[in-house]
Length: 322
Image 1: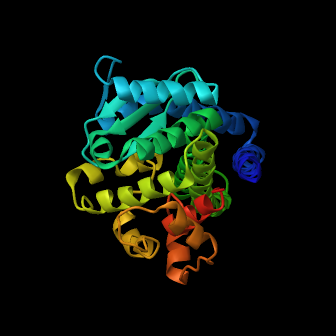
Image 2: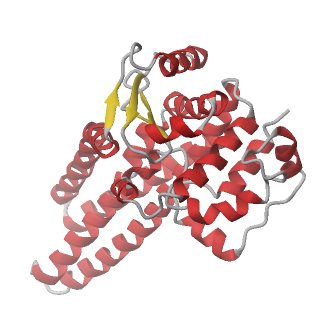
């Protein structure tokens, strides 16, 4: 519940900032201008909500598959969706060789779950089931739509910053108004930076929440931990690939951040005590007894990422094991 509460507080804070900025602009520029900013701002939200599934589908090179084409995958998704109390999502296989999975859609009824060709070659059945449970949990929590909508707020702040600074520098108007406009623009740039960090924070929260959801749907925590471990290695091998650059803008939808994987391998190898390439129950329990300590650089780097630090994330999974 604490993860859910933090997400709701974050949404309230971000929309509070948006409302406050637009109301402030209305008071400074006149009611008409404020309403204009309000309409344009919510127009951005609506456009993002409508077109985001198409953008994700194009970037990820998805092929939607029938039950005849991928019977085992369909069965796995159907069983987990029933357990989660969800309509069965549309099932797709991305033609990307990057090992990963993702879910997206505008609502629970519009849910879509996809795996890449790479992940199907990398994980065993229980590990893949844990990952699909993670993705179905995103649909159940409706956080795909939430993260899509709140990610527009920094863009609105950026747009407000540029337009007000442009107005101040070249728009003319009464004496002194240009200086105020520039100050407003600088303030909006600062809010753009802050709201962007808040969106990234929300993205990290939802990953912890979906890991918990996967366990609640019946997956063992060490299977999810092993899947994350294998994904880190699989993604690290492709860190300079053209595919990785192609999906950079939508990597928040992935199970893990493929851009960070190369740097996470050293941390994760400390958990794999028998060097088997997996994280078994005993290794997860051993991690449960340890305190995870990150360097200042690791803590700082995590602030600017879409996914939690992998060691912290697997530590969180260890607390879910029984």
